[in-house]
Image 1 (cartoon, rainbow over the protein chains, first blue to last red):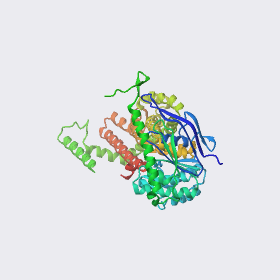
Image 2: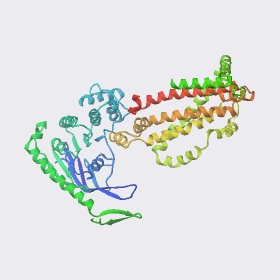
Image 3: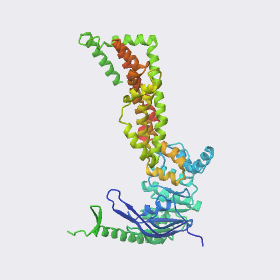
Image 4: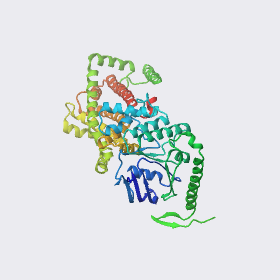
Amino acid sequence: MTQPIFKAENVYKSFKDPKSGVSLCALGGLSLEIRQGEFVSVIGPSGSGKTTLLYLMAGFLRPDSGTLLYKGEEVLGPSPERTVIFQEYGLFPWKTAAGNVEFPLKARGLSAEARRIEALKYISMVHLDGFADKYPHQLSGGMKQRVGIARALACGPQAVLMDEPFAALDNITREMLQEEILRLWSGLGKTFVLITHHLDEAIFMSQRIIVMSARPGIVKESVEVRLPEPRTAEVKAHPAFMALKVRLMKSLREEVEKSLAASKGPSFVREMGVIKVVEKEEP
Amino acid sequence: MKGLVSVILIAAAWQAASLLGWLNPYLLPPPTKVLYAFKDAAQGGILFIYLAASLRRVLTGLALGFAAAVPLGVLAASRAGVRAYLLPVIELLRPVPPIAWIPLAILWFGIKGNGASNFITFIAAFFPLFLHTFSGVRHIEEIHLNAARTLGADRKMLLFDVAIPSALPFIVTGLRISLGFAWMSVIAAELIASTSGLGYMIEMNRSMMNIPNVMCGMITIGATGYLMNEAIVRVERRFSWKPGRQDK
Protein backbone atom coordinates (compact mmCIF):
# COMPACT_ATOMS: atom_id res chain seq x y z
CA MET A 1 0.00 0.00 0.00
CA THR A 2 1.38 3.39 -0.93
CA GLN A 3 1.54 6.05 1.72
CA PRO A 4 -0.99 8.90 1.58
CA ILE A 5 0.25 12.15 0.03
CA PHE A 6 -1.26 14.14 2.90
CA LYS A 7 -1.82 12.84 6.38
CA ALA A 8 -3.13 15.03 9.20
CA GLU A 9 -3.25 13.70 12.72
CA ASN A 10 -5.04 15.49 15.51
CA VAL A 11 -4.30 18.94 14.11
CA TYR A 12 -5.22 21.96 16.22
CA LYS A 13 -5.05 25.52 14.98
CA SER A 14 -6.44 28.62 16.59
CA PHE A 15 -6.18 32.30 15.77
CA LYS A 16 -5.99 35.20 18.14
CA ASP A 17 -7.97 38.29 17.34
CA PRO A 18 -5.26 40.97 17.60
CA LYS A 19 -7.74 43.58 18.86
CA SER A 20 -9.78 41.73 21.45
CA GLY A 21 -7.18 39.09 22.30
CA VAL A 22 -9.87 36.42 22.14
CA SER A 23 -8.58 33.29 20.52
CA LEU A 24 -10.75 31.36 18.14
CA CYS A 25 -10.24 27.68 17.53
CA ALA A 26 -10.43 26.98 13.78
CA LEU A 27 -9.38 23.34 13.79
CA GLY A 28 -9.97 21.18 16.83
CA GLY A 29 -8.09 17.95 16.43
CA LEU A 30 -8.57 17.23 12.74
CA SER A 31 -7.32 14.00 11.21
CA LEU A 32 -7.49 12.98 7.57
CA GLU A 33 -5.66 11.19 4.80
CA ILE A 34 -5.52 12.06 1.13
CA ARG A 35 -4.33 9.44 -1.33
CA GLN A 36 -1.95 10.13 -4.14
CA GLY A 37 -3.69 11.04 -7.40
CA GLU A 38 -7.01 11.58 -5.70
CA PHE A 39 -9.48 14.38 -6.42
CA VAL A 40 -10.87 15.39 -3.04
CA SER A 41 -13.24 18.19 -2.13
CA VAL A 42 -13.58 19.66 1.31
CA ILE A 43 -16.95 21.14 2.19
CA GLY A 44 -18.27 22.55 5.43
CA PRO A 45 -20.21 25.45 6.91
CA SER A 46 -18.46 28.78 6.71
CA GLY A 47 -15.99 29.22 9.52
CA SER A 48 -15.35 25.49 9.75
CA GLY A 49 -11.68 25.97 8.98
CA LYS A 50 -11.63 24.76 5.35
CA THR A 51 -9.24 27.46 4.23
CA THR A 52 -7.16 27.02 7.38
CA LEU A 53 -6.78 23.35 6.49
CA LEU A 54 -5.71 24.22 2.95
CA TYR A 55 -3.24 26.84 4.17
CA LEU A 56 -1.75 24.30 6.55
CA MET A 57 -1.34 21.86 3.69
CA ALA A 58 0.23 24.61 1.56
CA GLY A 59 2.60 25.47 4.40
CA PHE A 60 1.45 29.09 4.86
CA LEU A 61 0.45 28.15 8.42
CA ARG A 62 1.79 25.67 10.95
CA PRO A 63 -0.40 23.60 13.29
CA ASP A 64 -0.48 24.58 16.98
CA SER A 65 -0.30 20.89 17.78
CA GLY A 66 -0.70 17.61 15.96
CA THR A 67 1.13 16.65 12.79
CA LEU A 68 0.57 17.33 9.15
CA LEU A 69 2.62 15.16 6.84
CA TYR A 70 3.23 15.49 3.14
CA LYS A 71 4.64 12.25 1.72
CA GLY A 72 5.57 11.18 5.21
CA GLU A 73 7.39 14.40 6.06
CA GLU A 74 6.21 17.28 8.15
CA VAL A 75 5.06 20.35 6.23
CA LEU A 76 7.40 23.16 7.27
CA GLY A 77 6.67 25.81 4.67
CA PRO A 78 5.31 26.49 1.18
CA SER A 79 6.63 24.51 -1.75
CA PRO A 80 5.88 24.48 -5.48
CA GLU A 81 5.26 20.74 -5.09
CA ARG A 82 2.07 21.64 -3.23
CA THR A 83 1.01 24.75 -5.05
CA VAL A 84 -2.14 26.78 -4.51
CA ILE A 85 -4.79 28.22 -6.78
CA PHE A 86 -6.41 31.15 -4.99
CA GLN A 87 -9.96 32.36 -4.98
CA GLU A 88 -8.83 35.88 -5.85
CA TYR A 89 -6.36 34.47 -8.39
CA GLY A 90 -3.31 36.00 -6.69
CA LEU A 91 -1.85 37.00 -10.06
CA PHE A 92 0.96 39.54 -10.06
CA PRO A 93 -0.63 42.63 -11.64
CA TRP A 94 2.77 43.94 -12.76
CA LYS A 95 3.43 40.87 -14.89
CA THR A 96 1.72 39.76 -18.08
CA ALA A 97 -0.11 36.45 -18.29
CA ALA A 98 3.05 34.86 -19.65
CA GLY A 99 5.14 36.63 -17.01
CA ASN A 100 2.94 35.15 -14.31
CA VAL A 101 3.19 31.65 -15.75
CA GLU A 102 6.95 32.09 -16.12
CA PHE A 103 7.32 32.94 -12.44
CA PRO A 104 7.60 29.36 -11.11
CA LEU A 105 9.77 28.45 -14.10
CA LYS A 106 12.14 31.26 -13.24
CA ALA A 107 12.16 30.02 -9.65
CA ARG A 108 13.22 26.63 -11.00
CA GLY A 109 16.13 28.33 -12.77
CA LEU A 110 15.06 28.02 -16.42
CA SER A 111 16.62 30.43 -18.93
CA ALA A 112 14.50 33.29 -20.24
CA GLU A 113 14.03 31.57 -23.57
CA ALA A 114 13.08 28.18 -22.14
CA ARG A 115 10.71 29.90 -19.73
CA ARG A 116 8.84 31.61 -22.50
CA ILE A 117 8.43 28.45 -24.55
CA GLU A 118 7.31 26.46 -21.53
CA ALA A 119 4.93 29.21 -20.37
CA LEU A 120 3.26 29.39 -23.78
CA LYS A 121 2.70 25.64 -23.59
CA TYR A 122 0.81 26.00 -20.32
CA ILE A 123 -1.08 29.04 -21.58
CA SER A 124 -2.25 27.04 -24.55
CA MET A 125 -3.22 24.18 -22.20
CA VAL A 126 -5.77 26.49 -20.58
CA HIS A 127 -6.88 27.86 -23.99
CA LEU A 128 -5.47 31.35 -23.59
CA ASP A 129 -3.44 31.42 -26.81
CA GLY A 130 -3.10 35.01 -27.95
CA PHE A 131 -3.46 36.45 -24.46
CA ALA A 132 0.06 35.72 -23.28
CA ASP A 133 1.13 39.36 -23.32
CA LYS A 134 -1.96 40.84 -21.70
CA TYR A 135 -1.84 42.13 -18.15
CA PRO A 136 -4.23 40.67 -15.56
CA HIS A 137 -6.40 43.80 -15.51
CA GLN A 138 -7.01 43.35 -19.23
CA LEU A 139 -8.44 39.86 -18.68
CA SER A 140 -11.89 38.71 -17.51
CA GLY A 141 -12.29 36.85 -14.23
CA GLY A 142 -12.45 33.48 -15.96
CA MET A 143 -9.34 34.23 -18.00
CA LYS A 144 -7.50 35.39 -14.90
CA GLN A 145 -8.25 32.11 -13.19
CA ARG A 146 -7.06 30.25 -16.29
CA VAL A 147 -3.77 32.08 -15.91
CA GLY A 148 -3.81 31.08 -12.25
CA ILE A 149 -4.28 27.45 -13.26
CA ALA A 150 -1.55 27.60 -15.91
CA ARG A 151 0.80 29.19 -13.39
CA ALA A 152 0.09 26.48 -10.81
CA LEU A 153 0.68 23.74 -13.38
CA ALA A 154 3.95 25.35 -14.42
CA CYS A 155 5.21 24.53 -10.92
CA GLY A 156 5.13 20.88 -11.91
CA PRO A 157 3.22 20.19 -8.68
CA GLN A 158 2.49 16.83 -7.07
CA ALA A 159 -0.57 18.33 -5.42
CA VAL A 160 -2.75 21.25 -6.50
CA LEU A 161 -4.58 22.95 -3.63
CA MET A 162 -7.55 25.03 -4.68
CA ASP A 163 -9.19 27.54 -2.36
CA GLU A 164 -12.67 28.16 -3.78
CA PRO A 165 -11.12 28.89 -7.16
CA PHE A 166 -14.41 29.48 -8.97
CA ALA A 167 -16.23 31.44 -6.28
CA ALA A 168 -15.82 34.81 -8.02
CA LEU A 169 -16.95 33.54 -11.43
CA ASP A 170 -20.32 33.43 -13.17
CA ASN A 171 -22.04 30.05 -13.60
CA ILE A 172 -21.12 29.32 -17.21
CA THR A 173 -17.47 30.21 -16.69
CA ARG A 174 -17.48 28.20 -13.50
CA GLU A 175 -18.79 25.08 -15.23
CA MET A 176 -16.35 25.40 -18.09
CA LEU A 177 -13.43 25.74 -15.72
CA GLN A 178 -14.63 22.81 -13.64
CA GLU A 179 -14.57 20.60 -16.71
CA GLU A 180 -11.19 21.97 -17.69
CA ILE A 181 -9.70 21.23 -14.28
CA LEU A 182 -11.08 17.69 -14.45
CA ARG A 183 -9.54 17.20 -17.87
CA LEU A 184 -6.18 18.44 -16.58
CA TRP A 185 -6.47 16.27 -13.49
CA SER A 186 -7.17 13.08 -15.41
CA GLY A 187 -4.37 13.89 -17.85
CA LEU A 188 -1.78 14.67 -15.19
CA GLY A 189 -2.51 12.05 -12.53
CA LYS A 190 -1.71 14.52 -9.75
CA THR A 191 -3.55 15.02 -6.48
CA PHE A 192 -6.14 17.80 -6.46
CA VAL A 193 -7.73 19.19 -3.32
CA LEU A 194 -10.66 21.54 -3.74
CA ILE A 195 -12.14 23.73 -1.04
CA THR A 196 -15.67 24.72 -1.93
CA HIS A 197 -19.00 25.54 -0.39
CA HIS A 198 -20.77 24.55 -3.56
CA LEU A 199 -22.29 21.08 -3.27
CA ASP A 200 -22.84 20.47 -6.99
CA GLU A 201 -19.26 21.42 -7.66
CA ALA A 202 -17.93 19.10 -4.99
CA ILE A 203 -19.99 16.13 -6.21
CA PHE A 204 -19.36 16.77 -9.88
CA MET A 205 -15.62 17.06 -9.53
CA SER A 206 -14.51 14.76 -6.74
CA GLN A 207 -13.86 11.13 -6.12
CA ARG A 208 -14.28 11.77 -2.44
CA ILE A 209 -15.84 14.52 -0.37
CA ILE A 210 -14.70 15.43 3.11
CA VAL A 211 -17.39 17.11 5.20
CA MET A 212 -16.15 19.31 7.99
CA SER A 213 -17.99 19.99 11.22
CA ALA A 214 -18.93 23.39 12.54
CA ARG A 215 -16.18 25.25 14.39
CA PRO A 216 -13.86 24.00 15.75
CA GLY A 217 -13.40 22.06 12.55
CA ILE A 218 -12.81 18.33 12.42
CA VAL A 219 -13.65 15.83 9.71
CA LYS A 220 -17.28 14.91 10.19
CA GLU A 221 -17.41 12.32 7.46
CA SER A 222 -15.72 11.27 4.27
CA VAL A 223 -17.99 10.27 1.40
CA GLU A 224 -16.90 8.39 -1.71
CA VAL A 225 -18.52 9.69 -4.89
CA ARG A 226 -19.45 6.72 -7.03
CA LEU A 227 -20.30 8.31 -10.32
CA PRO A 228 -19.07 7.39 -13.80
CA GLU A 229 -15.77 8.90 -14.93
CA PRO A 230 -14.81 10.90 -16.91
CA ARG A 231 -17.44 13.24 -15.55
CA THR A 232 -19.59 15.03 -18.05
CA ALA A 233 -22.47 17.43 -17.61
CA GLU A 234 -24.88 14.44 -17.80
CA VAL A 235 -23.56 13.19 -14.47
CA LYS A 236 -25.45 16.00 -12.81
CA ALA A 237 -28.75 14.36 -13.81
CA HIS A 238 -27.68 10.95 -12.49
CA PRO A 239 -29.94 9.64 -9.67
CA ALA A 240 -26.88 8.90 -7.54
CA PHE A 241 -25.84 12.54 -7.91
CA MET A 242 -29.17 13.72 -6.59
CA ALA A 243 -29.18 11.21 -3.75
CA LEU A 244 -25.70 12.26 -2.69
CA LYS A 245 -26.61 15.90 -2.87
CA VAL A 246 -29.58 15.40 -0.57
CA ARG A 247 -27.47 13.44 1.86
CA LEU A 248 -24.67 16.01 1.96
CA MET A 249 -27.14 18.84 2.26
CA LYS A 250 -28.60 17.23 5.39
CA SER A 251 -25.15 16.67 6.81
CA LEU A 252 -24.16 20.30 6.20
CA ARG A 253 -27.43 21.61 7.55
CA GLU A 254 -26.83 19.79 10.82
CA GLU A 255 -23.51 21.55 11.16
CA VAL A 256 -24.88 24.96 10.34
CA GLU A 257 -27.62 24.48 12.93
CA LYS A 258 -25.04 23.42 15.47
CA SER A 259 -23.01 26.54 14.89
CA LEU A 260 -26.15 28.67 15.18
CA ALA A 261 -27.03 26.95 18.45
CA ALA A 262 -23.51 27.48 19.69
CA SER A 263 -23.71 31.20 19.04
CA LYS A 264 -26.87 31.34 21.13
CA GLY A 265 -25.29 29.42 23.97
CA PRO A 266 -22.46 30.45 26.24
CA SER A 267 -20.32 33.10 24.64
CA PHE A 268 -16.92 34.52 25.37
CA VAL A 269 -16.85 37.95 26.84
CA ARG A 270 -13.71 39.86 27.46
CA GLU A 271 -13.51 41.93 30.57
CA MET A 272 -10.40 43.70 31.79
CA GLY A 273 -8.23 41.39 29.74
CA VAL A 274 -9.70 38.27 31.33
CA ILE A 275 -11.80 35.94 29.25
CA LYS A 276 -14.89 34.76 31.03
CA VAL A 277 -17.55 32.38 29.89
CA VAL A 278 -20.92 34.04 30.31
CA GLU A 279 -24.38 32.60 29.79
CA LYS A 280 -26.45 34.68 27.45
CA GLU A 281 -29.71 35.86 28.88
CA GLU A 282 -32.74 34.64 27.05
CA PRO A 283 -35.35 37.35 26.53
CA MET B 1 -4.98 75.05 -21.63
CA LYS B 2 -7.25 76.62 -19.05
CA GLY B 3 -4.14 77.01 -16.91
CA LEU B 4 -2.53 79.07 -19.65
CA VAL B 5 -5.57 81.36 -19.74
CA SER B 6 -5.19 82.08 -16.02
CA VAL B 7 -1.49 82.83 -16.45
CA ILE B 8 -2.22 85.30 -19.26
CA LEU B 9 -5.02 86.94 -17.28
CA ILE B 10 -2.78 87.40 -14.25
CA ALA B 11 -0.01 88.89 -16.40
CA ALA B 12 -2.51 91.21 -18.08
CA ALA B 13 -3.91 92.42 -14.74
CA TRP B 14 -0.40 92.93 -13.45
CA GLN B 15 0.57 94.93 -16.53
CA ALA B 16 -2.60 97.01 -16.29
CA ALA B 17 -1.98 97.75 -12.61
CA SER B 18 1.54 98.87 -13.47
CA LEU B 19 0.33 101.15 -16.28
CA LEU B 20 -2.23 102.70 -13.94
CA GLY B 21 0.58 103.42 -11.52
CA TRP B 22 -0.82 101.28 -8.74
CA LEU B 23 2.43 99.37 -8.32
CA ASN B 24 5.83 100.66 -7.33
CA PRO B 25 7.96 99.91 -10.45
CA TYR B 26 11.05 99.32 -8.33
CA LEU B 27 9.45 96.79 -6.00
CA LEU B 28 7.20 95.08 -8.55
CA PRO B 29 8.19 95.89 -12.14
CA PRO B 30 5.65 95.21 -14.93
CA PRO B 31 5.77 91.96 -16.96
CA THR B 32 7.21 93.78 -19.97
CA LYS B 33 10.26 94.75 -17.94
CA VAL B 34 10.62 91.18 -16.74
CA LEU B 35 10.40 89.99 -20.35
CA TYR B 36 13.22 92.32 -21.33
CA ALA B 37 15.27 90.95 -18.46
CA PHE B 38 14.57 87.47 -19.77
CA LYS B 39 15.70 88.46 -23.24
CA ASP B 40 18.97 89.89 -21.94
CA ALA B 41 19.72 86.99 -19.63
CA ALA B 42 18.93 84.46 -22.34
CA GLN B 43 20.95 86.27 -25.00
CA GLY B 44 23.93 86.53 -22.72
CA GLY B 45 23.59 82.82 -22.01
CA ILE B 46 23.90 83.35 -18.27
CA LEU B 47 20.33 82.18 -17.64
CA PHE B 48 21.03 78.79 -19.19
CA ILE B 49 24.36 78.41 -17.44
CA TYR B 50 22.71 79.05 -14.08
CA LEU B 51 19.75 76.85 -14.93
CA ALA B 52 22.10 74.01 -15.90
CA ALA B 53 24.08 74.46 -12.68
CA SER B 54 20.92 74.23 -10.57
CA LEU B 55 19.58 71.27 -12.53
CA ARG B 56 22.84 69.39 -12.20
CA ARG B 57 22.76 69.79 -8.42
CA VAL B 58 19.17 68.63 -8.22
CA LEU B 59 19.84 65.57 -10.33
CA THR B 60 23.00 64.73 -8.40
CA GLY B 61 21.20 64.99 -5.07
CA LEU B 62 18.27 63.03 -6.43
CA ALA B 63 20.52 60.26 -7.74
CA LEU B 64 22.40 60.05 -4.44
CA GLY B 65 19.16 60.15 -2.50
CA PHE B 66 17.71 57.39 -4.67
CA ALA B 67 20.80 55.23 -4.24
CA ALA B 68 20.59 55.57 -0.47
CA ALA B 69 16.84 55.69 0.15
CA VAL B 70 15.56 52.83 -2.00
CA PRO B 71 17.83 50.07 -0.64
CA LEU B 72 17.34 51.34 2.92
CA GLY B 73 13.58 51.55 2.42
CA VAL B 74 13.43 47.98 1.10
CA LEU B 75 15.63 46.76 3.92
CA ALA B 76 13.65 48.53 6.61
CA ALA B 77 10.39 47.22 5.19
CA SER B 78 11.49 43.62 4.84
CA ARG B 79 13.53 43.17 8.03
CA ALA B 80 11.97 43.87 11.39
CA GLY B 81 15.41 44.16 13.02
CA VAL B 82 16.58 46.89 10.64
CA ARG B 83 13.23 48.63 10.95
CA ALA B 84 13.44 48.83 14.73
CA TYR B 85 16.86 50.48 14.62
CA LEU B 86 16.41 52.66 11.56
CA LEU B 87 12.92 54.16 11.74
CA PRO B 88 13.41 56.19 14.96
CA VAL B 89 16.57 57.73 13.51
CA ILE B 90 14.80 58.59 10.26
CA GLU B 91 11.85 60.07 12.12
CA LEU B 92 14.21 62.22 14.22
CA LEU B 93 16.05 63.58 11.21
CA ARG B 94 13.05 64.00 8.93
CA PRO B 95 11.49 67.04 10.64
CA VAL B 96 14.75 68.99 10.20
CA PRO B 97 14.14 71.00 7.00
CA PRO B 98 16.86 70.68 4.34
CA ILE B 99 17.49 74.44 4.67
CA ALA B 100 18.48 73.96 8.30
CA TRP B 101 21.37 71.83 7.11
CA ILE B 102 22.83 74.74 5.09
CA PRO B 103 25.11 76.10 7.85
CA LEU B 104 26.61 72.65 8.35
CA ALA B 105 26.85 72.11 4.61
CA ILE B 106 28.83 75.35 4.25
CA LEU B 107 31.19 74.28 7.00
CA TRP B 108 31.68 70.83 5.53
CA PHE B 109 31.79 71.61 1.82
CA GLY B 110 32.47 75.36 1.52
CA ILE B 111 30.73 77.97 -0.62
CA LYS B 112 32.54 77.29 -3.87
CA GLY B 113 31.71 74.31 -6.03
CA ASN B 114 28.72 72.05 -5.83
CA GLY B 115 29.35 70.13 -2.62
CA ALA B 116 27.11 72.11 -0.30
CA SER B 117 24.18 72.32 -2.74
CA ASN B 118 24.50 68.65 -3.70
CA PHE B 119 24.36 67.74 -0.05
CA ILE B 120 21.24 69.83 0.54
CA THR B 121 19.42 68.31 -2.44
CA PHE B 122 20.46 64.87 -1.23
CA ILE B 123 18.91 65.56 2.17
CA ALA B 124 15.76 66.91 0.52
CA ALA B 125 15.43 63.94 -1.83
CA PHE B 126 16.20 61.22 0.69
CA PHE B 127 13.20 61.32 3.02
CA PRO B 128 10.25 61.22 0.60
CA LEU B 129 11.93 58.45 -1.38
CA PHE B 130 12.74 56.46 1.72
CA LEU B 131 9.22 56.71 3.13
CA HIS B 132 7.54 55.87 -0.15
CA THR B 133 9.77 52.88 -0.80
CA PHE B 134 9.24 51.73 2.74
CA SER B 135 5.47 51.93 2.65
CA GLY B 136 5.38 50.52 -0.89
CA VAL B 137 7.15 47.38 0.21
CA ARG B 138 5.10 47.22 3.41
CA HIS B 139 1.91 47.36 1.37
CA ILE B 140 2.56 44.19 -0.60
CA GLU B 141 -0.59 42.16 -0.55
CA GLU B 142 -0.51 38.99 1.52
CA ILE B 143 -1.88 37.00 -1.39
CA HIS B 144 1.04 38.04 -3.62
CA LEU B 145 3.54 36.95 -1.01
CA ASN B 146 1.74 33.67 -0.46
CA ALA B 147 1.49 33.09 -4.20
CA ALA B 148 5.20 33.79 -4.68
CA ARG B 149 6.15 31.39 -1.91
CA THR B 150 3.91 28.62 -3.16
CA LEU B 151 5.40 29.05 -6.63
CA GLY B 152 8.88 28.45 -5.30
CA ALA B 153 10.32 31.98 -5.10
CA ASP B 154 13.57 32.37 -3.17
CA ARG B 155 14.60 35.58 -1.37
CA LYS B 156 16.05 37.09 -4.51
CA MET B 157 12.85 36.57 -6.51
CA LEU B 158 10.75 37.79 -3.59
CA LEU B 159 12.77 41.00 -3.72
CA PHE B 160 13.16 41.63 -7.46
CA ASP B 161 10.06 39.97 -8.85
CA VAL B 162 7.59 40.74 -6.10
CA ALA B 163 8.58 43.39 -3.53
CA ILE B 164 10.17 45.98 -5.81
CA PRO B 165 7.72 45.78 -8.75
CA SER B 166 4.85 45.81 -6.28
CA ALA B 167 6.29 48.94 -4.66
CA LEU B 168 7.29 50.61 -7.92
CA PRO B 169 4.25 52.90 -8.21
CA PHE B 170 4.99 54.14 -4.67
CA ILE B 171 8.67 54.60 -5.48
CA VAL B 172 7.93 56.67 -8.57
CA THR B 173 5.55 58.85 -6.57
CA GLY B 174 8.31 59.24 -4.00
CA LEU B 175 10.63 60.27 -6.80
CA ARG B 176 8.21 62.97 -7.90
CA ILE B 177 7.90 64.40 -4.41
CA SER B 178 11.66 64.19 -3.87
CA LEU B 179 12.31 66.02 -7.11
CA GLY B 180 10.02 68.85 -6.04
CA PHE B 181 11.68 69.05 -2.63
CA ALA B 182 15.17 68.95 -4.09
CA TRP B 183 14.32 71.70 -6.57
CA MET B 184 12.99 73.98 -3.83
CA SER B 185 15.97 73.25 -1.61
CA VAL B 186 18.61 73.82 -4.25
CA ILE B 187 17.37 77.36 -4.74
CA ALA B 188 17.51 77.97 -1.00
CA ALA B 189 21.00 76.49 -0.83
CA GLU B 190 22.19 78.63 -3.72
CA LEU B 191 20.83 81.80 -2.13
CA ILE B 192 23.31 81.30 0.67
CA ALA B 193 25.94 78.74 -0.15
CA SER B 194 26.84 79.04 -3.82
CA THR B 195 28.39 81.17 -6.52
CA SER B 196 26.25 79.92 -9.37
CA GLY B 197 22.75 78.68 -10.10
CA LEU B 198 19.31 80.26 -10.20
CA GLY B 199 19.24 80.87 -6.46
CA TYR B 200 22.55 82.72 -6.70
CA MET B 201 21.20 84.70 -9.67
CA ILE B 202 18.22 85.89 -7.62
CA GLU B 203 20.31 86.84 -4.63
CA MET B 204 22.96 88.63 -6.67
CA ASN B 205 20.35 90.69 -8.56
CA ARG B 206 18.54 91.51 -5.34
CA SER B 207 21.71 92.99 -3.90
CA MET B 208 21.95 95.18 -6.99
CA MET B 209 18.23 96.09 -6.80
CA ASN B 210 17.83 94.54 -10.22
CA ILE B 211 14.27 93.35 -9.57
CA PRO B 212 13.25 92.35 -13.14
CA ASN B 213 16.14 89.88 -13.13
CA VAL B 214 15.11 88.57 -9.70
CA MET B 215 11.67 87.87 -11.11
CA CYS B 216 13.12 86.38 -14.25
CA GLY B 217 14.99 83.88 -12.04
CA MET B 218 11.86 83.14 -10.04
CA ILE B 219 9.78 82.51 -13.13
CA THR B 220 12.46 80.20 -14.54
CA ILE B 221 12.40 78.24 -11.28
CA GLY B 222 8.63 77.90 -11.41
CA ALA B 223 8.52 76.93 -15.07
CA THR B 224 11.32 74.37 -14.74
CA GLY B 225 9.71 72.81 -11.68
CA TYR B 226 6.42 72.61 -13.54
CA LEU B 227 8.01 70.89 -16.56
CA MET B 228 9.92 68.41 -14.40
CA ASN B 229 6.76 67.51 -12.54
CA GLU B 230 4.85 67.02 -15.79
CA ALA B 231 7.60 64.76 -17.09
CA ILE B 232 7.63 62.58 -14.02
CA VAL B 233 3.84 62.33 -13.90
CA ARG B 234 4.19 60.68 -17.29
CA VAL B 235 6.82 58.32 -15.92
CA GLU B 236 4.49 57.62 -13.02
CA ARG B 237 1.72 56.55 -15.38
CA ARG B 238 4.10 54.41 -17.34
CA PHE B 239 5.30 52.51 -14.26
CA SER B 240 1.95 52.14 -12.59
CA TRP B 241 0.59 48.64 -12.97
CA LYS B 242 -2.59 49.72 -11.24
CA PRO B 243 -5.29 49.42 -13.93
CA GLY B 244 -7.35 52.56 -13.34
CA ARG B 245 -4.40 54.89 -13.47
CA GLN B 246 -2.75 53.22 -16.41
CA ASP B 247 -5.78 53.48 -18.66
CA LYS B 248 -6.27 57.18 -18.07
